Length: 487
Image (cartoon, rainbow, N blue to C red; front, side, top):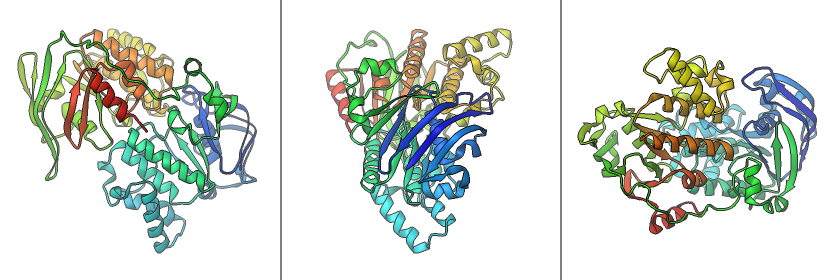
């Protein structure tokens, strides 16, 4: 049982100013509980209070009591709490200690003295439950975001905790992997485990959850039973800042790009060692389109993005762009990429400097334009804050701001709505539509069906490093997308 009695917590830093207040919450053993609400509502802080990371790792002032299986958590060390509670973070890289996948799954068990024979048994059983035997003995750095998330889930499950805490576990996952995650949670529930999930994506959990805790401004506003929550109309959910709990319906629509000229990447390929990973004879898209790049985890979407931006070497191919042929080594001059893990591209000491860094000049005009971009992204209050101290969603928006400021003609966004609530998803959508109006072409790698429908006007689908199909929102393509997003 997890009990929070009159709990309030405020961070000691400006970067994490949003705390929680007057929290009274009781979670019974075996329950699956969703914590939801708009970004900054306090749901991640609740998870940190339960697993002990606040105030031990994220310092602040804590009032009230937190009981884990009847024991005051203040009397337990993080080591002791880790044996009772397993946590999977939004960014799985932040919890990795090994460079190979099997070693990572075994790491926690080794540190708690589990025998070698038992570790092997647990690895075998858990990788089978997670449908991820194929990920054993792999280089962690060569895995996709979704594959890394699977490794994080497996490493936590191997510790056999009674309580699981998942923070935005689906944010980087495709629908096939979300389906696997759903089955893992279902399996934990059958085992009587307690599962607490802070999440923006809600639809995949509707069959599994017992309760939904809705938070706003650091307080619990409603504690819904799952049946009560399912009765809430979609428009009301959006007003609450929540994503839909219903499957997105994709339909045929007018081709907005039918009168536009096209550009094309021709005979592009890339190999990891001797294995050809990307091999595409032709990708043709309209100038100024918002291109949804679809495919399952590991299909080659992020690799293709890195190729276009010059982040991969040994790339072959050409770009037929504005009546000229541009070879692969020069593509980087046209393009800018917002990575799936934006921590890789945040370099400066302040948010404002981060956006200015993408501009050609560092002067007062650039500073004024950078502030305007940050205001559009609701980040103007963080101008002087260090980018790496922000939340995942805030970092994402800073990187998007840098892309806008770069003034490049081809922009690539790898999961730009990862960890964003409904309102911020719409804001990002409007920004990308504004870029379209400026004549810029955007490639959007996404597993977010609401964002895809809201934003993208052209589609390409990758599978095993090849282009399977592409085109506008025809009836046939809309049906393909609907099938892709089925769980």
